[in-house]
Length: 89
Image 1 (cartoon, rainbow, N blue to C red):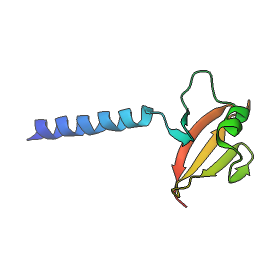
Image 2 (cartoon, rainbow, N blue to C red):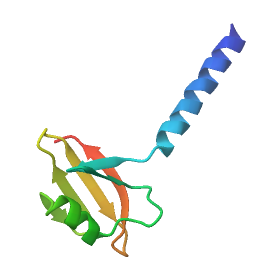
Image 3 (spheres, helix red, strand yellow):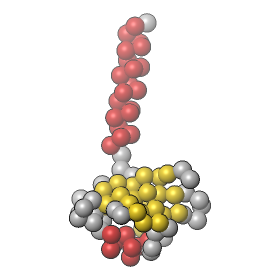
Image 4 (cartoon, rainbow, N blue to C red):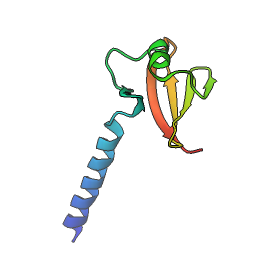
């Protein structure tokens, strides 16, 4: 029984690690923006694809999608996209 619990626990930890490495994305029209792109996504590229955000707070922008989903985009000091997170209003 202990061996089965160890296997289950290891599997859960493995799945948790995998989910943390998946890239986050947001769709703008027909294009997707991913926070793991090697060349980076600049603020200018995001503006060109998605338009003005709902709110800007320094290097953090918020986009509200027609379906009600809200996305938080955080940019680094160089103006390149660092992370995308779906938020709850």
